[in-house]
Length: 559
RNA sequence: UGGGCCGUCGCCAAGCGGUAAGGCACCAGGUUUUGAUCCUGGCAUUCGUUGGUUCGAUUCCAGCCGGCCCAGCCA
Image (cartoon, rainbow, N blue to C red; front, side, top):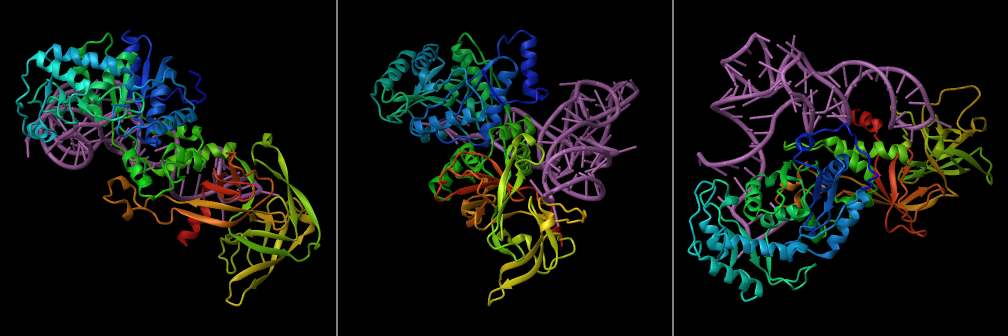
């Protein structure tokens, strides 16, 4: 492994403790884990938690982690998802030891099934799906045996071989483990372990028409790979007795240990591939990589860094408690990372024209701006300045409250890196809308300071009109209006209609690259931005990854 | 009324019988040519609850209360 991601080595949790104990006792020689996605959708932030756990723990204990595609359901899986998943795992910064498919083990699995049949531990059931459900009982009533439960071994074997040979239609027979119809754990009431599906599989094509189910496949795949610790989410806790039963009966050389942890729930998002797929299918988002999606591809396009996602995963911990993580935690992880790495630039989202009346008409000069306020390694750049500039509409108020220390009539503010200006006049159209501002500047304040050292509290950003580059900017808000949209019955009622506002006439300073090259910028005072995948030289498009923390907005709101 | 699991600050989360870490959020100051960043300080006499064991319990035991998961030929 050569992971570039760093994790606090001091992080601890009950799974790391369990692994430490297994290593200390000698039960585990070399730690082997696996991340086992089904290629039936794109990875989301919830998967990131599992990826960071599995790969992180493997790295920290000098073991390794496999990326295994759990592809036992040919009707839902395809290569588009396989490729997207690989890309996302690599993007996060992790390297797998091997990258098998569960379907690579179909031959072995079939042999294991035969073994179970021969041992009398599995039988072919010819009841319909409905009948099987009926006879399984309920949460409070035990199941009852169907008419095929005691079929002779030879007949089971013949039927199963004929199933494999394609002699039967979908649903005619299934192979069931023979365990305990009275168990309080419904998973143990003779679970189906093989079914007939005449479907083309993305990896094995038409080689098979019978497919093993999750419970039969997973533990055996783990065993085949020598996985020592099979880490999964809480809903599989009830499956652990079955996981262990299968391994005991088949008795492969190795018996992995399954440990469950709680899945990630993030406010205002959904971590369910099925539901995310619905959003895509319904056209409620642009696609899996829509920047509002909690998918890794969406977050990447939005401008999240892999480091910030890994940091987030390390921040939230691993437990068995159902929890709901506040958005603020993710936002903090993102801002924290972007703050240190993003170069600063100036851009105006809602331009307000401003004319400096005492500045020479045809003059143009260049002022120097720091690319990062704390880190000189990022260097400086030259920014064009001229008589007509754009400032942010929000930075001007005609009737400003005491605490507002930006521009208003008669007040002086600093144009970042440039000059002090004082507002002299407000130009309005016939309807009274503010059209532009007329100001004067103090030639002695070049660079943003004066010899008299007078106090200018406000500093605002600006862009020279003659040099500005017009751009489209996507501003984002949360996709949903409720903290737990996954609980909603229909998405229409909880989806935020204003989750994406498009600004068509934003103005950028010239020194900004905008051709989809994934450079994270901070547009000063506005937030972090990244050029969108569709951005071109002719039509620059930027996505706002995240706004800056805005104390003024809070003060303004409480007024 | 079946089986499994969980309950420590607003949200996460350490703690493993010796007297409540940390992060996020929040509040109050300081620095600041981003109302950003950064820095300082504040923020659980209490660990769902009631009993029990113990010199001593968030940690052990029992009851109760609250929450989550399971009846796919999905994973």
